[in-house]
Image (cartoon, rainbow, N blue to C red; front, side):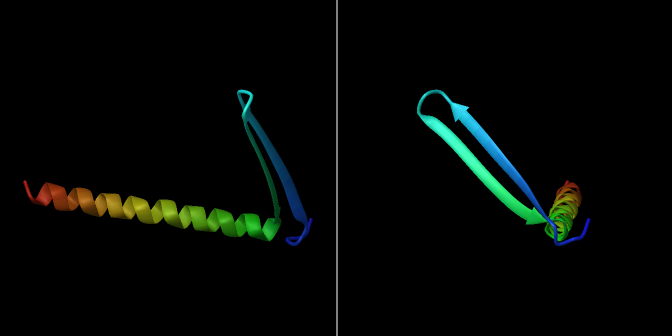
Length: 61
């Protein structure tokens, strides 16, 4: 399987009689790796921000 082979996904959601959501996504394996790297970097950076804020808060006491 190459990194340029596309992956497809479709999502259907119905809520009651009036609300309907359909989402289609096509992404390559390389794109999935890039998305995973972006999500990981966001989570890691938010953890660092929270830790810094807690340390600053504890220093004020």
